[in-house]
Amino acid sequence: MVPAPDSETPTATSLPHGRPMHPFSVQRIDHLVLRVADLERAIAFYGRVLGMVVVRRRDDLGLVHVAAGSSMLDLVALDGPLGRKGGAGPGTEGRNLDHLCLRVDPFDEAALVDFLARHQVSPLAPASRNFGAEGEGPSLYIRDPDGNTVELKGPAIR
Image 1 (spheres, rainbow, N blue to C red):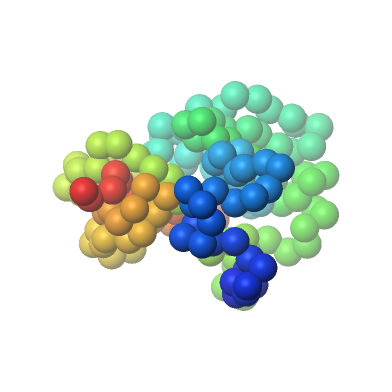
Image 2 (image 1 turned 90 degrees about the vertical axis):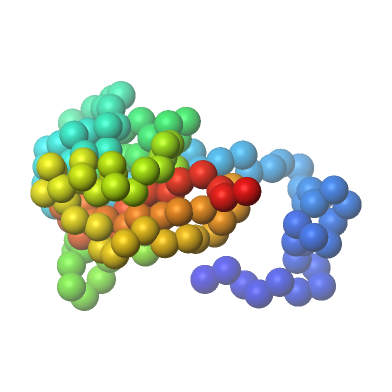
């Protein structure tokens, strides 16, 4: 949980030029790691349905790195050396994370829904307008084969 801002916690609106006074600045998400029950099924989903490409495999660890634009999604097999360290996998009693958001372009809801249907993937609801890194824009939510929620996020509406 992120602590609530206090008088010593910088916010974008409280600092000159909206820049925190740190010796570094966060540029983007570098990578996100998902623990998955079936590594090959996850690779197929992220490759076939979302067009992401495997860039490296570490079979000794049960780990696959998949390109997500300028970021990376790491898929870790639950039964592999890394996956076993995390205990039970996602299920009805718990999840890996709330959701992963992938910025997509273009965002054409009808085309996305049609494409997803051809891969037996159904949106959880019609597209909605949500806030993201670029501002308010359209989003469509789906689930991957392990039950992780994936948000497909369009550009900000100007």
